[in-house]
Amino acid sequence: MEMVKLHNNLTSERNKLQMSYMNLSEEREQLQMSFSNLSEEQDQLQKRFEDITNERNELEKRLLALRSYGWIYFSSSLYYISSSKKSWQQSRADCLQKGADLVIINSHEEQEFIQTFKKLIWIGLTDMESEGKWKWVDGTPLTTSYWDRNEPNGVPDRDEDCAEIKKYDSEQSWNDESCGLERFWICEKLLFQ
Ligand code: MAN
Ligand code: CA
Image 1 (cartoon, rainbow, N blue to C red):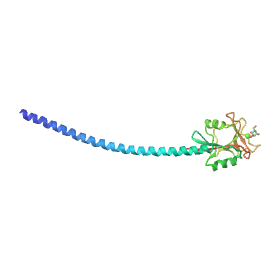
Image 2 (tube, rainbow, N blue to C red):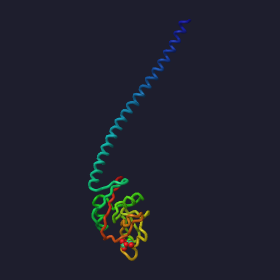
Image 3 (cartoon, rainbow, N blue to C red):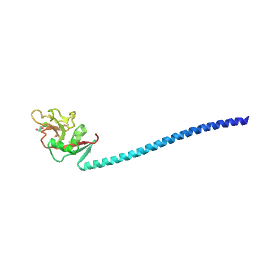
């Protein structure tokens, strides 16, 4: 009788062990699977990291090259401040030829930044298409403006269709002026578009 009981106990013990062996095998297989997935993912991430590093180095080189040609970085744009004076149209042509355009001022910070050059500067704002309707060179209508007191005064007695920075010591620094007059100018190249 004792022998039979012992035998039964052992059999049941063996079954339990077999079951847990099967479970462990299954678990091991799953772990192996997820390990190889992770390895693959790690390889992909490594590759991506290398690509991004290369891209960053390439962009850094380009930025340095642009800087050596007189471009200044500010808040996601590059700016080129001229060292000679031209008419508004000629200034714009120079910017376009550089793959940029006359500066578009769309923040308070950018307005302050442009003031720091302390020069009479053409900006990318004109009402030459339709008198009194000021538009930026990208076609967007003027919303926030920084006109000097009593500006723009080009209507109706004067022909002043282009905007310049004039009173650069005050925040309200813009003046409308005759486009043919010669001024310094600032080109802007957006970095992310
Ligand atoms: C000059 C020009 C005008 C400007 C007045 C302001 O006449 O620059 O464009 O409006 O000065 O006094
Ligand atoms: Ca004016």
